[in-house]
Image 1 (cartoon, rainbow, N blue to C red):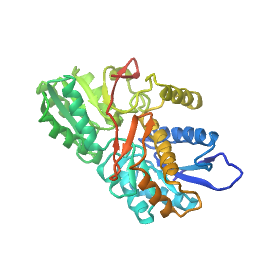
Image 2: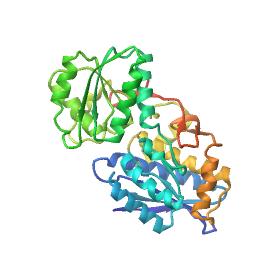
Image 3: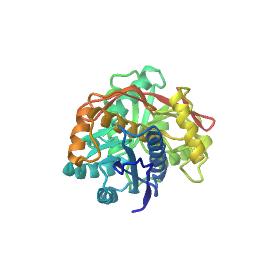
Image 4: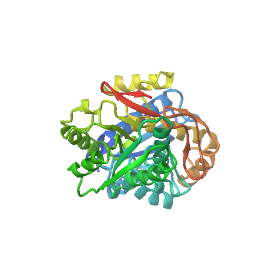
Length: 368
Protein backbone atom coordinates (compact mmCIF):
# COMPACT_ATOMS: atom_id res chain seq x y z
CA UNK A 1 0.00 0.00 0.00
CA UNK A 2 1.58 3.28 -1.04
CA UNK A 3 1.62 6.34 1.15
CA UNK A 4 1.72 10.08 0.69
CA UNK A 5 3.93 12.17 2.91
CA UNK A 6 2.12 13.74 5.89
CA UNK A 7 1.17 17.35 5.28
CA UNK A 8 1.39 19.87 8.08
CA UNK A 9 2.35 23.40 8.98
CA UNK A 10 3.46 23.21 12.58
CA UNK A 11 2.82 25.85 15.18
CA UNK A 12 5.15 26.23 18.19
CA UNK A 13 3.25 23.44 19.94
CA UNK A 14 3.90 19.99 18.55
CA UNK A 15 0.29 18.99 19.25
CA UNK A 16 -1.65 18.60 16.02
CA UNK A 17 -4.91 17.03 14.94
CA UNK A 18 -3.89 14.01 12.87
CA UNK A 19 -6.33 13.21 10.06
CA UNK A 20 -5.94 10.01 8.05
CA UNK A 21 -7.26 10.04 4.49
CA UNK A 22 -7.94 6.86 2.48
CA UNK A 23 -8.67 6.44 -1.22
CA UNK A 24 -7.43 5.01 -4.53
CA UNK A 25 -4.31 6.75 -5.82
CA UNK A 26 -3.63 3.90 -8.26
CA UNK A 27 -5.83 1.49 -10.17
CA UNK A 28 -9.11 1.97 -12.05
CA UNK A 29 -10.48 4.60 -9.68
CA UNK A 30 -7.34 6.68 -9.18
CA UNK A 31 -9.09 9.79 -10.45
CA UNK A 32 -11.35 9.67 -7.40
CA UNK A 33 -8.56 9.26 -4.87
CA UNK A 34 -6.27 11.83 -6.42
CA UNK A 35 -9.05 14.38 -6.25
CA UNK A 36 -9.71 13.48 -2.61
CA UNK A 37 -6.03 13.82 -1.70
CA UNK A 38 -5.45 17.05 -3.62
CA UNK A 39 -8.49 18.80 -2.15
CA UNK A 40 -7.77 17.63 1.39
CA UNK A 41 -4.31 19.13 1.10
CA UNK A 42 -5.73 22.47 -0.10
CA UNK A 43 -8.19 22.53 2.81
CA UNK A 44 -5.53 21.60 5.37
CA UNK A 45 -3.16 24.25 4.04
CA UNK A 46 -5.91 26.87 4.22
CA UNK A 47 -6.85 25.93 7.76
CA UNK A 48 -3.26 25.91 8.99
CA UNK A 49 -2.48 29.23 7.31
CA UNK A 50 -5.52 30.73 9.06
CA UNK A 51 -4.34 29.60 12.50
CA UNK A 52 -5.54 26.00 12.60
CA UNK A 53 -8.52 24.60 14.51
CA UNK A 54 -8.97 26.25 17.89
CA UNK A 55 -5.27 27.13 17.66
CA UNK A 56 -4.08 23.61 16.77
CA UNK A 57 -2.55 22.78 13.42
CA UNK A 58 -3.75 20.00 11.13
CA UNK A 59 -1.56 17.16 9.91
CA UNK A 60 -2.81 14.58 7.46
CA UNK A 61 -1.51 11.46 5.81
CA UNK A 62 -2.96 9.69 2.78
CA UNK A 63 -2.99 5.95 2.19
CA UNK A 64 -3.72 4.36 -1.19
CA UNK A 65 -6.27 1.53 -1.04
CA UNK A 66 -6.80 0.99 -4.80
CA UNK A 67 -10.56 0.97 -4.02
CA UNK A 68 -10.09 -2.50 -2.52
CA UNK A 69 -11.77 -3.42 0.78
CA UNK A 70 -8.90 -5.50 2.18
CA UNK A 71 -6.29 -2.91 1.18
CA UNK A 72 -8.44 -0.19 2.70
CA UNK A 73 -8.40 -1.97 6.06
CA UNK A 74 -4.62 -2.28 5.74
CA UNK A 75 -4.49 1.44 4.99
CA UNK A 76 -6.53 2.18 8.09
CA UNK A 77 -4.23 0.06 10.25
CA UNK A 78 -1.20 1.91 8.89
CA UNK A 79 -2.82 5.26 9.65
CA UNK A 80 -3.75 4.11 13.13
CA UNK A 81 -0.10 3.16 13.72
CA UNK A 82 0.88 6.64 12.51
CA UNK A 83 -1.37 8.15 15.14
CA UNK A 84 -4.46 9.14 13.18
CA UNK A 85 -7.25 10.50 15.37
CA UNK A 86 -9.87 11.11 12.65
CA UNK A 87 -10.52 9.41 9.31
CA UNK A 88 -11.56 11.12 6.07
CA UNK A 89 -12.50 8.11 3.92
CA UNK A 90 -12.63 5.66 2.48
CA UNK A 91 -13.41 7.16 -0.91
CA UNK A 92 -15.37 4.28 -2.47
CA UNK A 93 -18.29 2.42 -0.91
CA UNK A 94 -17.00 -1.14 -0.65
CA UNK A 95 -13.71 -0.02 0.86
CA UNK A 96 -15.47 2.37 3.22
CA UNK A 97 -17.82 -0.30 4.55
CA UNK A 98 -14.84 -2.49 5.42
CA UNK A 99 -13.16 0.33 7.32
CA UNK A 100 -16.27 1.21 9.33
CA UNK A 101 -15.91 -1.99 11.32
CA UNK A 102 -12.41 -0.93 12.33
CA UNK A 103 -13.31 2.64 13.25
CA UNK A 104 -16.27 1.33 15.26
CA UNK A 105 -13.95 -0.96 17.24
CA UNK A 106 -11.65 1.98 17.98
CA UNK A 107 -14.50 4.50 18.34
CA UNK A 108 -12.72 6.78 15.87
CA UNK A 109 -14.61 9.56 14.11
CA UNK A 110 -14.99 8.75 10.42
CA UNK A 111 -16.44 10.87 7.65
CA UNK A 112 -16.44 9.62 4.08
CA UNK A 113 -16.43 12.24 1.33
CA UNK A 114 -18.02 9.96 -1.25
CA UNK A 115 -18.86 6.52 0.15
CA UNK A 116 -22.52 6.44 -0.76
CA UNK A 117 -23.66 2.93 0.18
CA UNK A 118 -26.10 2.86 3.08
CA UNK A 119 -23.67 0.77 5.15
CA UNK A 120 -20.96 3.44 4.95
CA UNK A 121 -22.67 5.18 7.87
CA UNK A 122 -23.94 2.08 9.67
CA UNK A 123 -22.45 3.07 13.05
CA UNK A 124 -22.89 6.18 15.17
CA UNK A 125 -19.27 7.29 14.55
CA UNK A 126 -19.78 7.30 10.74
CA UNK A 127 -20.86 10.33 8.69
CA UNK A 128 -20.77 11.27 5.02
CA UNK A 129 -20.63 14.40 2.84
CA UNK A 130 -22.24 12.93 -0.29
CA UNK A 131 -25.77 11.65 -0.78
CA UNK A 132 -26.46 8.00 -0.03
CA UNK A 133 -27.16 5.63 -2.92
CA UNK A 134 -30.91 5.56 -2.19
CA UNK A 135 -30.98 9.33 -2.02
CA UNK A 136 -29.16 9.58 -5.36
CA UNK A 137 -31.67 7.21 -6.94
CA UNK A 138 -34.59 9.11 -5.43
CA UNK A 139 -33.24 12.54 -6.41
CA UNK A 140 -32.37 11.39 -9.94
CA UNK A 141 -35.89 10.11 -10.59
CA UNK A 142 -37.41 13.27 -9.16
CA UNK A 143 -35.09 15.55 -11.14
CA UNK A 144 -35.81 13.77 -14.42
CA UNK A 145 -39.55 13.72 -13.76
CA UNK A 146 -39.91 17.27 -12.46
CA UNK A 147 -37.93 18.67 -15.39
CA UNK A 148 -39.65 16.54 -18.03
CA UNK A 149 -36.37 15.20 -19.37
CA UNK A 150 -37.69 11.88 -20.71
CA UNK A 151 -40.77 9.73 -21.25
CA UNK A 152 -39.24 6.28 -21.70
CA UNK A 153 -36.13 5.34 -19.73
CA UNK A 154 -33.83 2.33 -19.89
CA UNK A 155 -31.49 1.57 -17.00
CA UNK A 156 -28.14 -0.20 -17.29
CA UNK A 157 -26.67 -1.04 -13.90
CA UNK A 158 -24.13 -3.29 -12.17
CA UNK A 159 -26.06 -5.83 -10.09
CA UNK A 160 -22.83 -6.98 -8.41
CA UNK A 161 -22.01 -3.52 -7.03
CA UNK A 162 -23.64 -2.01 -3.92
CA UNK A 163 -23.32 1.51 -5.31
CA UNK A 164 -25.02 0.79 -8.61
CA UNK A 165 -27.71 -1.60 -7.39
CA UNK A 166 -28.57 0.66 -4.45
CA UNK A 167 -29.19 3.63 -6.71
CA UNK A 168 -31.17 1.56 -9.22
CA UNK A 169 -33.52 0.07 -6.63
CA UNK A 170 -34.53 3.46 -5.24
CA UNK A 171 -34.74 4.99 -8.73
CA UNK A 172 -37.09 2.23 -9.88
CA UNK A 173 -39.31 2.65 -6.85
CA UNK A 174 -39.54 6.43 -7.20
CA UNK A 175 -40.17 6.10 -10.95
CA UNK A 176 -43.64 4.82 -10.08
CA UNK A 177 -44.44 8.34 -8.83
CA UNK A 178 -43.00 10.14 -11.85
CA UNK A 179 -44.35 10.91 -15.36
CA UNK A 180 -41.97 8.56 -17.14
CA UNK A 181 -41.79 4.81 -17.69
CA UNK A 182 -38.86 2.43 -17.21
CA UNK A 183 -39.05 0.38 -20.41
CA UNK A 184 -35.91 -1.71 -19.86
CA UNK A 185 -33.71 -2.52 -16.86
CA UNK A 186 -30.60 -4.38 -17.91
CA UNK A 187 -27.96 -5.60 -15.48
CA UNK A 188 -24.32 -6.58 -15.84
CA UNK A 189 -21.77 -7.80 -13.29
CA UNK A 190 -18.12 -7.22 -12.48
CA UNK A 191 -17.31 -10.40 -14.43
CA UNK A 192 -19.03 -9.18 -17.59
CA UNK A 193 -18.55 -5.45 -18.09
CA UNK A 194 -16.91 -4.96 -21.46
CA UNK A 195 -19.63 -5.77 -24.00
CA UNK A 196 -22.90 -3.88 -23.53
CA UNK A 197 -24.36 -4.54 -26.99
CA UNK A 198 -27.23 -6.69 -25.67
CA UNK A 199 -28.26 -4.14 -23.03
CA UNK A 200 -28.07 -1.26 -25.51
CA UNK A 201 -30.03 -3.11 -28.17
CA UNK A 202 -32.82 -3.86 -25.67
CA UNK A 203 -32.92 -0.19 -24.66
CA UNK A 204 -33.09 0.87 -28.30
CA UNK A 205 -35.75 -1.70 -29.19
CA UNK A 206 -37.86 -0.57 -26.21
CA UNK A 207 -37.84 2.99 -27.56
CA UNK A 208 -35.97 4.51 -24.63
CA UNK A 209 -35.32 8.18 -25.20
CA UNK A 210 -33.05 8.27 -22.12
CA UNK A 211 -30.65 5.76 -20.60
CA UNK A 212 -29.95 6.06 -16.88
CA UNK A 213 -26.46 4.87 -15.91
CA UNK A 214 -26.00 4.56 -12.12
CA UNK A 215 -22.48 3.21 -12.68
CA UNK A 216 -18.85 4.32 -12.68
CA UNK A 217 -17.16 6.25 -15.46
CA UNK A 218 -15.07 3.39 -16.92
CA UNK A 219 -18.11 1.31 -17.86
CA UNK A 220 -19.99 4.46 -18.86
CA UNK A 221 -17.27 5.29 -21.38
CA UNK A 222 -17.60 1.85 -22.96
CA UNK A 223 -21.38 2.18 -23.14
CA UNK A 224 -21.22 5.60 -24.80
CA UNK A 225 -18.66 4.31 -27.29
CA UNK A 226 -20.67 1.20 -28.15
CA UNK A 227 -23.94 3.13 -28.39
CA UNK A 228 -22.38 5.53 -30.87
CA UNK A 229 -21.06 2.62 -32.95
CA UNK A 230 -24.57 1.19 -33.28
CA UNK A 231 -26.15 4.56 -34.06
CA UNK A 232 -28.09 4.81 -30.81
CA UNK A 233 -28.20 8.36 -29.46
CA UNK A 234 -30.53 8.69 -26.45
CA UNK A 235 -30.18 11.23 -23.68
CA UNK A 236 -27.88 10.05 -20.90
CA UNK A 237 -28.32 10.64 -17.18
CA UNK A 238 -26.03 9.44 -14.42
CA UNK A 239 -24.87 10.08 -10.84
CA UNK A 240 -21.62 10.97 -9.14
CA UNK A 241 -19.89 7.77 -10.31
CA UNK A 242 -19.83 9.27 -13.82
CA UNK A 243 -17.59 12.06 -12.55
CA UNK A 244 -14.16 11.29 -13.96
CA UNK A 245 -15.23 10.42 -17.49
CA UNK A 246 -13.77 13.64 -18.93
CA UNK A 247 -10.20 12.87 -17.99
CA UNK A 248 -9.98 9.45 -16.46
CA UNK A 249 -10.35 7.05 -19.42
CA UNK A 250 -7.53 6.34 -21.83
CA UNK A 251 -8.29 6.42 -25.56
CA UNK A 252 -11.86 7.59 -25.01
CA UNK A 253 -13.48 10.11 -27.34
CA UNK A 254 -14.77 12.66 -24.82
CA UNK A 255 -16.91 14.30 -27.51
CA UNK A 256 -19.31 11.38 -26.92
CA UNK A 257 -20.12 12.90 -23.52
CA UNK A 258 -21.68 16.00 -25.03
CA UNK A 259 -25.07 16.50 -23.40
CA UNK A 260 -24.59 13.84 -20.72
CA UNK A 261 -26.35 14.85 -17.50
CA UNK A 262 -25.40 13.76 -14.03
CA UNK A 263 -26.63 14.36 -10.52
CA UNK A 264 -23.69 15.81 -8.64
CA UNK A 265 -23.39 18.40 -5.88
CA UNK A 266 -20.53 20.31 -7.50
CA UNK A 267 -20.04 22.26 -10.71
CA UNK A 268 -16.62 23.82 -11.29
CA UNK A 269 -18.16 26.62 -13.33
CA UNK A 270 -20.39 27.85 -10.49
CA UNK A 271 -19.92 31.56 -9.90
CA UNK A 272 -19.97 31.71 -6.10
CA UNK A 273 -16.78 32.96 -4.43
CA UNK A 274 -15.98 29.71 -2.58
CA UNK A 275 -16.16 27.59 -5.73
CA UNK A 276 -14.12 30.01 -7.81
CA UNK A 277 -11.45 30.31 -5.11
CA UNK A 278 -11.19 26.53 -4.79
CA UNK A 279 -11.13 25.89 -8.55
CA UNK A 280 -8.46 28.56 -9.06
CA UNK A 281 -6.23 27.11 -6.33
CA UNK A 282 -6.75 23.56 -7.59
CA UNK A 283 -5.87 24.45 -11.18
CA UNK A 284 -2.81 26.42 -10.10
CA UNK A 285 -1.56 23.62 -7.88
CA UNK A 286 -2.46 20.55 -9.93
CA UNK A 287 -3.09 21.81 -13.46
CA UNK A 288 -6.53 20.22 -13.59
CA UNK A 289 -10.19 21.03 -12.95
CA UNK A 290 -11.42 19.53 -9.66
CA UNK A 291 -14.17 16.92 -9.77
CA UNK A 292 -16.99 16.23 -7.33
CA UNK A 293 -14.83 13.85 -5.30
CA UNK A 294 -12.35 16.66 -4.71
CA UNK A 295 -15.17 18.99 -3.66
CA UNK A 296 -16.58 16.40 -1.25
CA UNK A 297 -13.14 15.89 0.29
CA UNK A 298 -12.54 19.63 0.68
CA UNK A 299 -15.88 19.92 2.44
CA UNK A 300 -15.09 16.89 4.62
CA UNK A 301 -12.01 18.59 6.07
CA UNK A 302 -14.04 21.71 6.86
CA UNK A 303 -16.81 19.59 8.39
CA UNK A 304 -14.17 18.02 10.62
CA UNK A 305 -12.99 21.52 11.55
CA UNK A 306 -16.54 22.64 12.40
CA UNK A 307 -17.20 19.57 14.55
CA UNK A 308 -13.91 20.01 16.43
CA UNK A 309 -14.63 23.68 17.04
CA UNK A 310 -18.15 22.97 18.24
CA UNK A 311 -17.11 20.11 20.53
CA UNK A 312 -13.97 21.75 21.89
CA UNK A 313 -11.95 18.54 21.70
CA UNK A 314 -8.15 18.81 21.75
CA UNK A 315 -5.35 16.71 20.23
CA UNK A 316 -4.20 15.43 23.63
CA UNK A 317 -7.51 13.62 24.17
CA UNK A 318 -7.98 9.95 23.37
CA UNK A 319 -9.29 8.90 19.97
CA UNK A 320 -12.49 7.72 21.64
CA UNK A 321 -13.06 10.96 23.54
CA UNK A 322 -12.42 12.99 20.39
CA UNK A 323 -14.96 10.84 18.56
CA UNK A 324 -17.61 11.18 21.27
CA UNK A 325 -17.28 14.95 21.21
CA UNK A 326 -17.34 15.26 17.45
CA UNK A 327 -20.24 12.92 16.77
CA UNK A 328 -22.37 14.83 19.28
CA UNK A 329 -21.39 18.11 17.60
CA UNK A 330 -22.31 16.85 14.11
CA UNK A 331 -26.04 17.25 14.73
CA UNK A 332 -25.50 20.85 15.86
CA UNK A 333 -23.25 22.30 13.15
CA UNK A 334 -24.13 23.98 9.87
CA UNK A 335 -21.55 24.16 7.07
CA UNK A 336 -21.55 26.21 3.89
CA UNK A 337 -19.42 24.18 1.51
CA UNK A 338 -18.67 23.56 -2.13
CA UNK A 339 -21.31 20.82 -2.32
CA UNK A 340 -24.08 22.58 -0.46
CA UNK A 341 -25.07 25.65 1.51
CA UNK A 342 -26.40 25.27 5.02
CA UNK A 343 -25.46 21.59 5.19
CA UNK A 344 -26.54 19.80 8.36
CA UNK A 345 -26.26 16.20 9.56
CA UNK A 346 -28.57 13.74 11.22
CA UNK A 347 -27.43 11.43 14.02
CA UNK A 348 -27.48 8.54 11.54
CA UNK A 349 -24.73 10.18 9.52
CA UNK A 350 -26.66 11.57 6.56
CA UNK A 351 -26.09 15.03 5.11
CA UNK A 352 -29.04 17.33 4.41
CA UNK A 353 -28.54 19.47 1.30
CA UNK A 354 -30.28 20.23 -1.98
CA UNK A 355 -29.51 18.00 -4.98
CA UNK A 356 -28.00 19.59 -8.08
CA UNK A 357 -27.31 18.43 -11.61
CA UNK A 358 -24.78 19.29 -14.31
CA UNK A 359 -24.59 18.74 -18.05
CA UNK A 360 -21.41 18.21 -20.07
CA UNK A 361 -20.96 20.90 -22.72
CA UNK A 362 -17.82 21.33 -24.80
CA UNK A 363 -15.88 18.98 -22.56
CA UNK A 364 -16.77 20.68 -19.27
CA UNK A 365 -19.44 20.41 -16.60
CA UNK A 366 -22.07 23.14 -16.64
CA UNK A 367 -24.61 23.69 -13.88
CA UNK A 368 -28.17 22.90 -14.97
